[in-house]
Image (cartoon, rainbow, N blue to C red):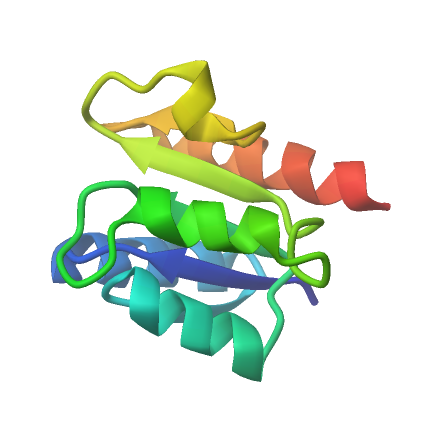
Length: 118
């Protein structure tokens, strides 16, 4: 079973994505900001991270930068989720999923990113 980490400050999004992805057979953990997300990654390395960009405490951009700087963590695939415009530089090689997204787009993206690892 693949482990996913969802990092988003909107509780409704965390709950909805957790429900959807759990039903699909994924083990899901959540964090409300980038700082919590990095702690989760340190405790229980996920197979994929779904990361919002705009959050308090530590935004997704800073979390992504720290992940990419750490040789032990940079190989974890990250899907950046945002309602705003995002540049290639901001993505740092990560996949982008525009909010709001369709359920099929989410599931296809998660599957594609996890399949890249195998």
